[in-house]
Structures are given as structure tokens and as C-alpha cells.
Length: 73
Length: 483
Image (cartoon, rainbow over all chains, first blue to last red; front, side):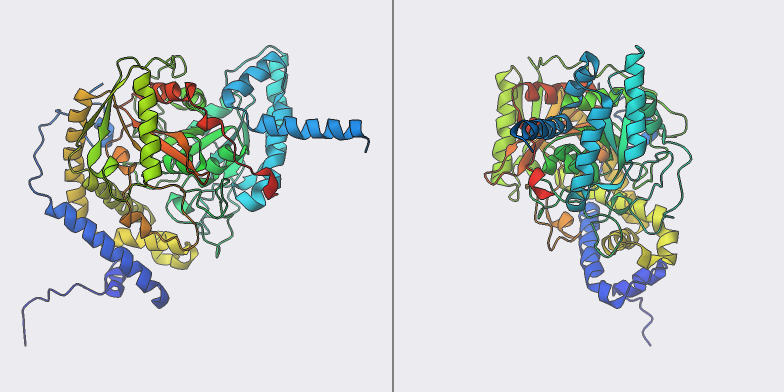
């Protein structure tokens, strides 16, 4: 018995079932295409080197309610 | 019919066609000098909308009786010397995710009750109503502002009035089609990743995505809570300014609404761009291999017009521009999934095919992906802020290609083409899509002007300056043969 955790990506059916979703079998091809693209996008974001720590108040913030704080006008 | 009778009939048809294609500014002037009544204008617009809606699919519901009542009230007010402002008596379209009192707010979704009448206007609609505007109807939207038209569902399929085989883009498709085809003089759209600017771009008119928080979003079905905005769509930048003056401002019912003061946007439109510093981001935007050559040339020709008027334009590199588009999508789909998750679990098949597939994409991302997208968002905001130290506005293409053929479209296409709009939702900035010409085959082209936070007056001013020396925004698609 191999106790090593599997590194195999879950199937799209299993992944969506984990979220409570049950698409029809005829829909899986299209969703898998979207999934592949989404995972590629996420990988690009995670692969970005050296996201900086910003100083609070230095720029307008992505946080919506503080959008105007310190922003250039 | 005598020749004289035929001439009268032809003149009437011509007048109606002219009235329906007026700018809001010109119509407002005509209502005040007595050469036009709101009832005649509204009748021309509603009749045209009714005649063409079967082909163009701009409206989910046309409210003829209510619109004519509102128009008559506007005319009565004019007659009594009462003027509530420039919107009085002008027929507008309201996207069908924005609450309009007395009719359902369907979101073009079968998951929403078709008979649930809205008891109150969304605050932004209430402001338009208070200003005397006339509501032609609820305009078609991509389902919940995220799907694609789905012929398996009961809602109209919107079509591009310049070529009905091509997409009118989304999600504010109906308002975009209505404005372009003269089925409304202006209207409301919403924009989370480009849904005001996309339809404005491919349908050949002007559309403004406002600064996050500039216009209250309460009463609007959400898509991405940290990205959503309600924006004006109209033929010209001046018309958008007329709308925004009424739409903008704090409302306590929207927790994200900003308290920043509202400027007189129309007063800012003086045509003067002398000394304006324009930044042109090259990497990913102008340098992208998938940017259509006709688009690139038209946008740069527009920039040239502005430099002829005294602006300066400088190329620069905006770091990580591709990731800016990606981060917007990760956040948008994650937030959309958060809103729809429970309904999606219970009513998967009631959503349109494309909608549920897009929403399922939000289920694929994990928490770390969203956290990383938000970390990136803060850094990207810094980089954009740094660019705005050197430039007053940025100009980009609104989209990489002209309107595409509808047949065979799939949501995955959105991920394989560059997108130039989501960056400004990610950073909350104002951005306006402005007509920039036409392809050789007659499809509209568009450029985008991006400004600093709450600098709507600035981007409107640049767009208006361009429209003072061009007439692309006044071109009307040949729709009369479609009915």
C-alpha cells in the first residue's frame, strides 16, 4: 500500500462535485477547456517573481472603500 | 395616395428616423426650442425599437405606455416652465440587471422569478427619473452580466446593428445596440471587466466605465462586488457627461459608494487638450501580435488628432500588463461564483449553458489563487499610479479586434485573446471607449482613454475633444432595411 499522497489533479467531475456542482456529461469537454485555461492563468500569477510588499497609504489601494486614499489626482 | 400625401409620409418617416438618431445634447436643445416634443421623440424611438427588436434583440421589455406617459409629463413640465435639467424628456434604455420600478429585474436569467415586480428603482435609476428621463424599457444583458446569448433560453438574442451576424459584445449588449441603432438616445450599462466599453466599442458609440464607487450600485444584480460599476452609454462623450452628472454621487445604500464630490462634467468639455500628456502602453497593448492592424492604425490616428490639438504622446511599458488582465478575471470569476454558488448547486440547468460554464470556472480557482490575484492587484495599482505621475491619461485600443462573428463563439475565446479593459476595473479607474473609425468592411473601431481616480471629467474631456474633430460617433448603422 502506498501512503504517499497522490499528486494527480482531481478530475473535473470530482472537483466540481466537491463544490456541489454536477454538470452533465456532455458539458464536461467545454468546462475542462475553461478549467485548463483558468489553471494556466493561476499558474502565471503564482509564477510571478517577487510581488512586493507595499507601504500602507503609498498608493490608492485595491481595497474598494479606500480607493481614494493617497491616490494621485 | 397622392404624390403630396406620399411626400408627407416620407417626411414623417424621415423625421422619426432623424429624431431617433439625435444626440442627447441636440435632442435636449430641440425640446427646449420647441422644435420637438418628448412625446414625438419617444414615439419615434419606441416605434423603431418595436419594429426592429425582433431582429436586433435590444430589449427584454419595451414599455411603450409608461414611456409615453413619462414623455407627456415631460412635455407638460416644459409647457409649465418647469425644467428638471438636460435629461428631461429624453428616452433611455436601462440594462436588465438594474432595478426599474414596476417591471421585473430578470438579469436575463430563468433562475429569477419572471413575475417579481420591482417595488422601487435602483438609486441610480431614481436619480434619472427625478431628472425627468423617459424609460423605453429594460435592455438585454448577458445572463447576470456574465454569459453569452443562449437560444435555449427565453430571452432575446442581441445582434450587432452594423452586421447582424456579428456580436454586439456584452454584457451591456442591449443598451449598446439600442444606442447605436437609435432605439434609445442613451442608457445605463454595467462594467466589471469591460461590459460597458465592449458594446460601445463594437456598436460604434461612446461608453464610460466610471471610477469604482462613483455611481451607487445598490439595486443592481452583482457580478464582482469589488469590480462592478454602473456607467453611461450614449452616442457622444458629451451625452455621457450629461448622464453622469445625474448618476454620480454618494448613496448610503451602497457600502462601496464614494463621497468624492461630483463635478459638472459637461462644463469641463471645452475641447482644450493643449499640454495634455498621453501615455501609450506598448507591451501587451500596442505591441500584441493579436492586435488587429486596422484597430492599431485607427487608435494611433486618434492619438495623432489629439497631438495635433496640442497634446503630447509618449510610449511606455506598463509592467505585468498581461497579468493585469488575468488577475481581473480570477477575481471576477471568484466573486461571481461566491454570489451564485448556492443557486448554481440547486438550479444548474436553469442557468444558460455559457453562464453556468463561466461560473464553474470560478469554482476551479482555490483560495490561494484569489489571494495571489489580490496581492498582484495591489502591486499593479502601484505600477499604474507610477505611470500616472508622468501622464494625465493613458490611451489603448478598446479591444484587440473588431466585432467577431457570433457563430461558434465560446467563453474560452475570452482567455485566448488579449483584453484591454479589465485592468481598469482591477484598479478602479475611469475609462471611456470612444469611436475611432471603421474597418474597410464597415465595422466600428474604438480607442480607450483611461484616467486617474475620479478624473471622469478628464477622460470625458479628451473624448469630447476628439469628437469635436471627428464624426465617427455620429454614424448610424443601416438598420431600417432589417425590419
